[in-house]
Length: 100
Length: 130
Figure (cartoon, one colour):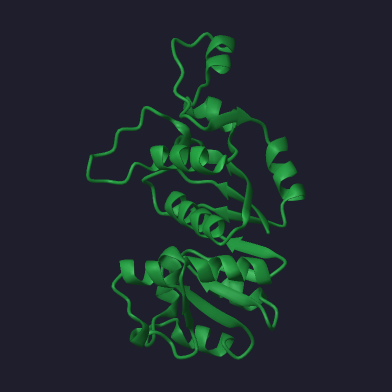
């Protein structure tokens, strides 16, 4: 299952809720302000780092770039994808949950 | 693969209209089919042709119309959400005695049944909103 999260963990609890409910083996894609959840060293980084043991976490590159976040500032293990990668994730997962 | 997309947020609000548009473009260029784009709640504001953003800004409404004409997309605006927000096509204008319409080219007004059908007919349904 693919989960997308579009809110910063500093503004909404949707990332926390998503990670607590996502089953092992799920894909979680951070888009829009959700990409702030990928930032290393933040107050929410340990939540995401722990989740990486059970789920794969991706961050959308154009949304990272729009916010001045580069790959070397991200939590290790998070994969950066473009919109083509977003489309691929939507194909390989048979269900999609968009957390809004 | 057959995708449908739901947009629940107006243009120039946050990012949903842009994310949905970019996703659809990427899906089309990868050879996938877009069965329908359904605009609900404030998302119906994506469908007014009276929008006039500054010239150096993207024109979100025209961008939808152009994409629809290029790829024969079905852009559907929810009728109840549209009536509340003053999005009107010629039929609705007549039915509600309005002095004009404002639906953008490529959009059509219909009901929630179109969303249900999109969910049934498509392999995947993605929701963009705030």
